[in-house]
Structures are given as structure tokens and as C-alpha cells.
Length: 353
Image (cartoon, rainbow, N blue to C red; front, side, top):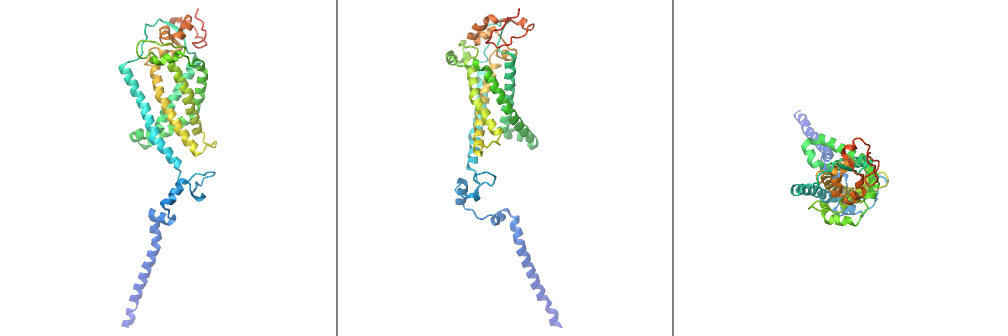
């Protein structure tokens, strides 16, 4: 009786040991799946540094290619890393230096030298310079340029400033709005820019006296006023910068805006770099154009707001043009009672009666 009572004790211990061993075996795969490193080790075959170098360089078979349709790019896209390095190490700093440097130069110039004032008092007699169509076109293009510049700067640098200031929620709305405005207003800007360039092309052909204008700094420094026709050397330089670099920016923007016309990824990357460099450079130069056209030169803004300029301003800044149209000057008080001429300042305008 005593022996039969002792037999169940060893068998219970053996069963318990077998049960613990079975649970341990079943738990091992679960633990492996719960740990990312152990999961990757069991799910992916071992890859040596040599294998990854092959993947990066493209010296591998189709199993290491991008799986998307019609793609022949490597699993590791070396050109994408090259684009990122160019954008972050060169383009972004270039933009800060160009725009920030221009702001500093303009500020120092204005403080040390100041804006260019008229050499004589205003005469009260006006000359027609810009018709309503050109003025409307100019201000539309200028407004679009400013919106595109601000949204572009936000896309490039905004996350380093506004995200930390306003938080993720506001920043998400801000970057989404900037992207929509930039993408949809960009093509409209490009079309209107071409129209504006064609409209004022006849005034911007280079002339010999433009070289002298640049030698004298456009008359901004000193008392001299170099010869200039309807458009001076600086205005012509800005025109041709828009007609070359500006159109390149527009073209590269179209490539980025419409990626469904067969552009490769490399093409999109280079279009992005070209677009950014050109747009940042144009923005920097545009700051100088805005300064000279507003507080930097007395009387300049009037021509693009009212269409008319004072005779004194015309003689100071565009003396050759003034000699051509001086007999078309009208008293300022007569303008409010008569309809402005239909043409621009280079065409014959009838005087009020």
C-alpha cells in the first residue's frame, strides 16, 4: 500500500517537465517575431557589405530592382542620394546667401547712399509711359511672382522656422497650402510672363549706350545721368534675365508639375535642382528691382501705378526717350478730365485739347 501511494509522485514531475519544455519550444518563435532584429534575421537572408555595394551600384540581377511597373531603378537609388546632397548642401545654402546677401546690400546702400532723388523740382507736366494693359499684366505677374517666391521659400526652408514656432498641426496646413498654391499658380505665372515679355520686347533690344549706363552704375551713385532710351540698361538686363533664366524656371516647373508625361526620376531630380537654383537667383535679383522701382528712385513707381511720369523724371532717367516724346507732355490737372492715350510711351499720344 505504501509503495502504490509513492508511484504517482515521480510521474507527475516528469509530465510537468515535459509540459514546460513544450511551452519553451512554442514560445521561441513568438519571441523572435516580437524582436525586430531577430525577426529580420529570420525573414531576410544574410546580406554582406559586398551585396549591398552591388545593389547600390546596379551590379545585380532583376531580383534587386525596383518592383514598380516599367522601372529599372536599383533597390538603393544612388541618384536620389546625390540629389539630396546637392539640394541640402549646395542649393539651400546658396538660396540663403543670395537672398540674405541681397537684403543686406540693399539695406547698406539705402543707409549709406540713400535713394536717388530728382535733380530738379517736378514740373507738373506728365508723359504717358505705360498703358493700362501693360500695367495690369505687370502687376498680375509681379503678384504671382511674390506668391510663388514666398511659397517656394516655405517649401524649402519653412520647416526649420514655422514648424518649431507653431507646431505640427499649423505647419501641416501651411505646407499643404503652399504646395497647392505653388503648383497651381506656377503654370499661370509662366503663361502670363511670356505674354508680358512679348509685349515689351521692342523696348529691350540692347543698344550701344547701354554699356555706358552700366559703367556709370545707372546714375545711382553720383550726380551723372547716363543716356537711356525708353528702357535703360538695368531694365533691359532684368528683362533678358526673365527671358532666359525665368523661362528655364518656368520650363522646369512644368516638368515638376506634370510628372505623367514620361519623365524619368533622374529628369525630375535635375528639374528640381535647376528650378530651385534659378528661382532663388531670380528672387534675389527681384529684390533689387523692387527697391529701385519703389523707394530707391523717386518717381519710378508712378509710371507703373498711374501710367504717367513727370517730365523731370523722364529727363533724369530716360533722356533719349524724353527727347522723342517731350512734345506730348500734358498738364497734370488735365489728366483727370481726359481719357489716357491707348498706346504706350513710345507711341504718339494726343494731348488733351
